Every structure is written in C-alpha cells, then in structure tokens.
Length: 158
Image (cartoon, one colour):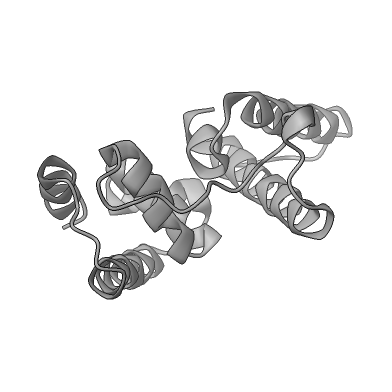
C-alpha cells in the first residue's frame, strides 16, 4: 500500500490498485497456477496496474472528481520537503521510482531485486540512473533542496 500510494500520490487510488492486485493473485491461485514468489508477483502486477492507470490518465486527462490520479502542479523550490521529493520524482521512469522508493524504505539491493523480479546489478544501474537524473534536475531547475531532505537522500541512496 505504501509503495503504491507513494508512486501515484494518493491513498484511495492506491487502495483500489492493491485490491486489484490481490484479487488477481486469488484468481490465479484458484485456477491452480503455481506462484513461487508471491511478493514479487504482486509487485509486478501492481506496477503494471499503476502503469495502466497513468496511461489512462494521460489519455483522458486528470479526473480529480473521481479520485483518480492527478498530476501535481510544479512546486516552487521553497516548498515542503515531501512536496519537493514528489515533484523531483517526475523526472524518473516508473521503474526508477520503484527502486528509489524501495531503497528509501531501507531495503537492501538484494531485497529490491527479489521484490521486483530483477537482478541486483539492474537495481544498481537503475538506482545510479535515478540519482544522476535527480542530480541533473536539481541543478538545471535551480532547485535548492531542503537540507534535511538532501542529507537523507544522500545517505540512503548510497
């Protein structure tokens, strides 16, 4: 739930997506399909559902009334640290966002790899790309990150 809400920026749509992922798991298991790593399977399904929601959102436009995903407006550099982080994540791909969020949740590279069903070296590569993109975005956009946020990111993402 925490992962989905962090990626899409809202609890209500995240609850729907997580519920859909668990429902798909239940259906697969009822059909007798063996799922060897349910956590990784659920994360993959959830990631796919988030992607579908974002694609649908971009085609149809924001639907604030229905509680679906609405892209946040750009924030000024003096905004709250949590808002700064959310805005900066806009420069990352969905997979890079996942890796960074899981790393920020203090998961080890091996654990991230298991959850996402990728190799440890892929986690390392995605994390390095994400850090480079975030660094570029802060420099090019004239961002001055809140000091506590910058320190936390620097320590956690290493």
